[in-house]
Image 1 (tube, helix red, strand yellow):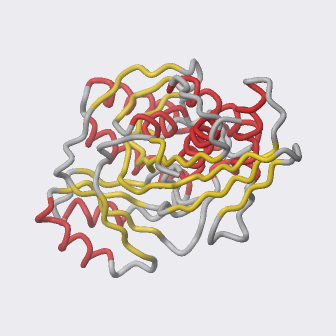
Image 2 (cartoon, rainbow, N blue to C red):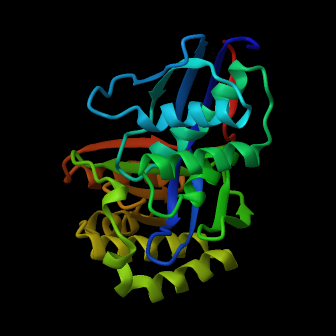
Length: 289
């Protein structure tokens, strides 16, 4: 059984290009983390719990544990718990991060060191099975796992490019009171913005990350009925980029540290809470038991 207990964490991510409309995306990691703890048992049952979120289903993390065990031909049971700094269902890749952490923690409980690509694939396959993703969210999952920026082809499951984000920058996140579940959105709902999103993806691939983030946010906010003014106000206060992350409902603004106070003050006109974080400097990791 190895150690029998494993703990791992993974980071959130912010959207640069949402992949739902065109099948290709981009994202970068944030220093908000989710931790997963897996304890193996001999009863063959896998039971999950999301600490502090009684209304949210633990099915995704249970599937992650099962898929790891099945991939190794093992029949253990397990208790898996997650504890998160990442708000759920607001566009900050809470599902991708939880999947990465749960998969890595299961390997740690078995005293195994998997390849990161293996962790990525198992998490994506689990997300498809759990019904929490439309495209597999390779962009979100890879940004969470590697702790950097990525530009991806989600349909071909290929990372086209990795990029670094200046860790001295700040990321301000506005989290509205309402949740918005990605699985409720269909590519057909977004067919009218597919062409513009493809252009924005090419922009990200060329390295114009902040312009891509802002334009992507405007496109998806309009298509999904979110208020784009909060991003526009952040830009007026000096943000380098601002826009909807994921399918919402959160908005992110990337800014130099001296601009953060002005952005936060302006955003207080909108209901919800404001988080201040940074680009990730480390991706998923095994932690001490």
